[in-house]
Length: 206
Image (cartoon, rainbow, N blue to C red; front, side, top):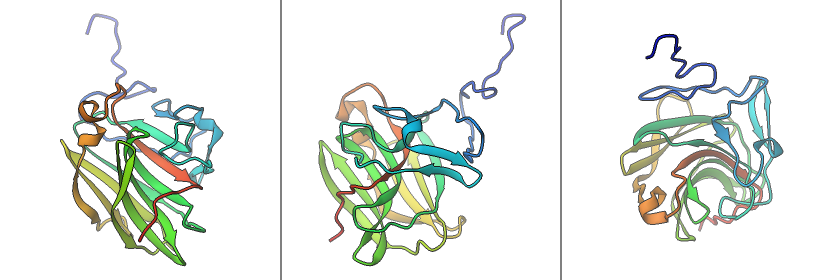
């Protein structure tokens, strides 16, 4: 470093480089600018409290070309693990909350909790070129917090969940992250990892 220059990488809001671990409990008065909204301000759907982040769902889902109630963090590494703790009880099949991997409204993965009839389900949905398919789903107990986790090792993505925060189970096996690349999806933004909620879920569990 040149004389007099202070390296603040990873502190005071400066983004860390290289390998790092970053934790966010959303309890501070201000939210780090690494967290972003899309097509609209993040403050339109989210509030912070001692209990963490609260998202008020928009009547748009992740496939809409409109503001969505999703708080995004850019994927910065070829290999990563992202984990969140979700406290959520859907009221109907149109309610969904969870995590997303998002390249655009036409290319993404949705990993979230919704309802089928009177039962709660965790699903993994893949959208490629605007066409969506549910890769896998499983019944889940939402009376306690659910821990959701996304891992990537290059092109191999895995979506895992846990009821105790320690022992994770996989849903849907290893899936390809090719749809999150600009080679397949086009564009220039790269992949986002998001915390997402909607009141107009369209993923129907058969």
